[in-house]
Amino acid sequence: MPKKFTVIDEAFTCAVCKAEVPVLGYTSRDHCNACLCSLHVDNNPGDRGNECKGVLRPVGLELNKKGRQILYKCDLCGISKKNITADDDNEDLIVKLSAKNIYEI
Figure 1 (cartoon, rainbow, N blue to C red):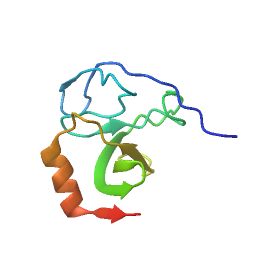
Figure 2 (cartoon, helix red, strand yellow):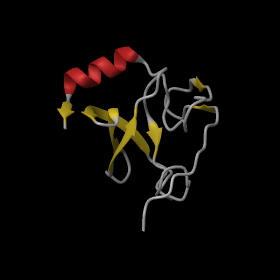
Figure 3 (cartoon, rainbow, N blue to C red):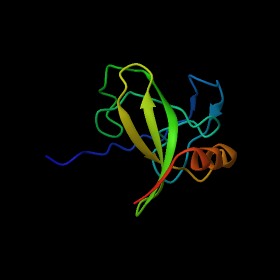
């Protein structure tokens, strides 16, 4: 069964840094553009069906045919996930992630 993608592009207040995160406008917003953190709320993108609700913290960066993807690890359950970077992401943090841990595939 293929993964489903539910488009949800809503403004929100970041649970980690409290930044007001605006609508992205061209695809789903799935992480804070200020601190790059996300919440572990989805089983499939946008479904909001995961009960964990832990903080997904950025731990690295991967370059692949999809572009730059932030690598995350959940504070609660330890799962690893990836999200594509957004145009308005904090570029200083992206650079720090790339210097810390980068994979090219």
